[in-house]
Length: 258
Ligand code: 5BU
Image (cartoon, rainbow, N blue to C red):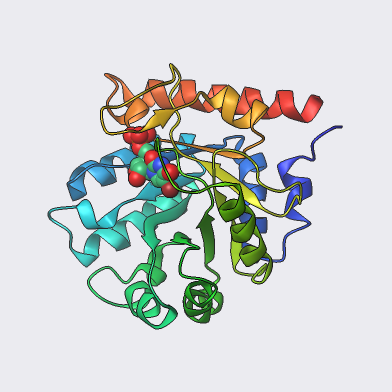
């Protein structure tokens, strides 16, 4: 069976942000998300500017930036517009609805003000999504639920993954999809994003497990590959990003033609 194109899937989304992201993938011809895990504002901005043309999403861990100031967020937003990528704060919320709402809205990072996308664990139950949605819906934000992690020994079994999918189905206008290693539903509206991507596979010394872009997109049916050290630790991150971009896009085209 042929797989629908990203832009065909955009038409099936209840979330305007999900539709925007699917359309962006086809317009820009990239399904590469960069995990920009650097610890200074200057490094983060330099990566965003240089690699911005290659990516659909820039994923941040804003709390690892040692010299964070709110100006960084203005500058990141400007670069996102300049290069047409979305910002994804990999916050992994995991508390009750009332608390996550505060964590999303306020504090030093004001995540809801600038991150188009954030993510949350489904473990606490639907209240976590409700809390985030109360704020996120008004700002046209989207949420990814963590269905399946890349790390060895994680506790997310099949029942957990299926329960996460059921939870997402209660909030189709705010949940845009999943962080997962495999597409967890055949419903075209969900965006599957996969971290733990490296062109040579392998692992790190702290239980991270890698699969290739081809395996994630073509074999496992994911939609977006997320790569960090495979790109940013390379001698030439721009050239390396282009290799990951090409590999991810080739796997998508191959899957569409199947
Ligand atoms: P790496 O350098 O490509 O290994 O970085 C992977 C990034 O994706 C890093 O920011 C992690 O926090 C993030 N990640 C992950 O690796 N695995 C997961 O299951 C989830 C997030 Br959820």
